[in-house]
Length: 66
Image (cartoon, rainbow, N blue to C red; front, side, top):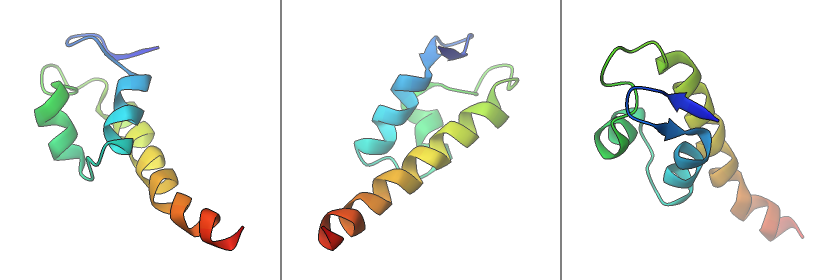
């Protein structure tokens, strides 16, 4: 689904950025242009991004416990 219509950024692109090592919303904004135009997507984009970062950070803990 498109999250940022202005710059055609999808939820998948946001998750992939988090998985590839982007750890701040400001960095996501610089790399993708997400939420740097009208800003109406910022709340949803931030939520998707922070959820993805949290999942990415939890993966090693899950793997170690297995």
